Image 1 (cartoon, helix red, strand yellow):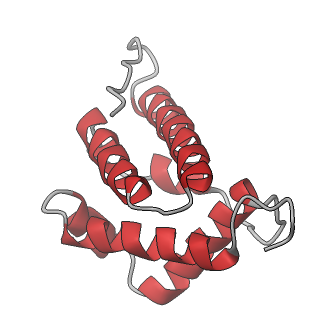
Image 2 (cartoon, rainbow, N blue to C red):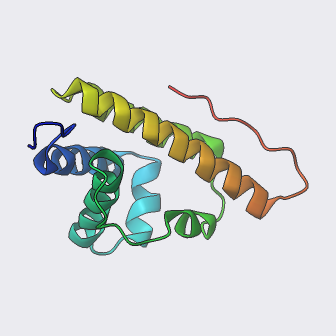
Amino acid sequence: MTPNALCTRQEIHDLVWDFYDRIRMDDVLGPIFSERIKDWDTHLGVMEEFWSSLLLKTDGFNGNPMAKHLSLSHIQASHFEQWLRLFKETCLERENKAMAELALEYAQRIARSFWFGYQFQHNPTKVASELQLP
């Protein structure tokens, strides 16, 4: 880890893989993710790059996660809330509390942003509802 770095790439790797282990075992989210993700190793590598871009300010991530989520059908606030609960549980297990705190803050912002975007895309005339953050 460089002297001013928040975390290491290994810590991000562990966060991502531990989190998605929870996702895959979850009764509600597991089937949603497994239906769409066929190559978990590749997906988790992309997620590592995504989180590295946020936590370490790297430039290896190339993608449009909002578009991927907008294309889903029948997503509800409870799905995003469960995603956040699992992410928070994973963060609470991290030894690096500074990284965990910032990662959770980003996750909450991302979930809210995706949920508002999803609502606007799928029902633009309805007033958007807020997520219940854990």
